[in-house]
Length: 229
Image (tube, rainbow, N blue to C red; front, side, top):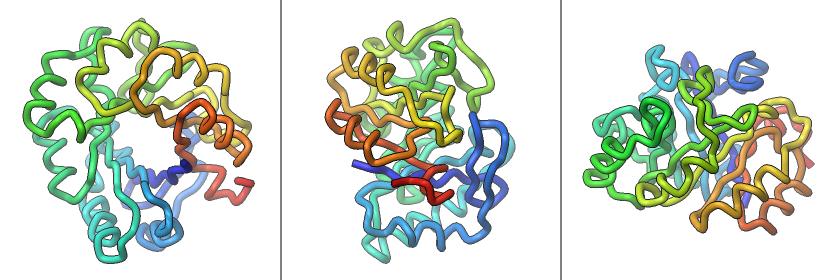
């Protein structure tokens, strides 16, 4: 399954290369969402909240209202989920699930204390853990900080606290040069939980290859630039 991505920054839909260089910005957030009405699932990430620079909660709420009104896609929302309160805030805004990234780790290890509390309040079925990597190591804080930890060192410890993983191959994110299928094949062998692959995916051939691995594919830049074929 292909999952379109809406990344929010400064009240606009944006696409960043490797999480840093802004390559695209669109003011009409709901207009973008309308392009994806027929998809079953949509990822909405608040980049400002992820970086601790404010937030776009009103736009998340608007997207969730739009989805309910128009029988649009279910929405997974993430960005800045570093507290139980923030997770509940996104769920109350209308998100079906929340994506937890930075707060899933503490001092270079899985943050079992926080994740246990989060599960107790919102439920494991509502949680997706972002297990993003660059140079083979897990990255957090908007992909600005690299942990001395590989996904294979953490994935088993995180399984009891989530319904699945969002795994971004940050090395290729936003480049439209294609992703690393061998990397995702490696990840697939590490867990039986669902995995959504992201990072550089630019073609239906790659989406089909990921489907054969039992993974969904989250796609952003290639869709917005019109190169996805």
